[in-house]
Length: 134
Image 1 (cartoon, rainbow, N blue to C red):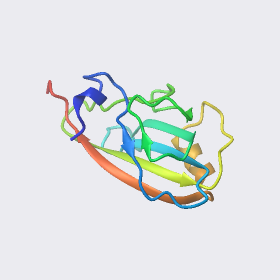
Image 2: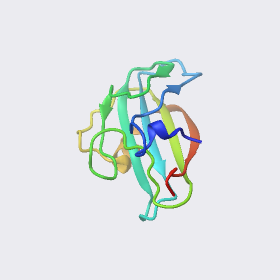
Image 3: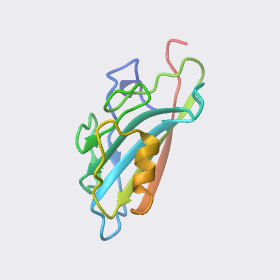
């Protein structure tokens, strides 16, 4: 379960992420956080970021790298806020062999297309969140 601190009911900040096993040649990291359970077709993108220095620990409230557009067309992290029930939030981290030259208005699909031939490794962590006030 994702603590409420990282949701719309809390501080709405990104959680810390620990990354192990970065392959040699990793030049940057990218992050995508997606909720496939959302009522919108294709789900809801909560966060995309790229050109993150290859580190093992990304701190909470991370604002480094380049922050792209979430589904609400705002830069940066948007915490879980499901209208009903528990939703699954997929935190995907990609190790890339280069840095990416993308605009700040880049969305998830554009980021995925640009990363396609640069992914050295990827990892995924799925967290659940249900509003406390439901």
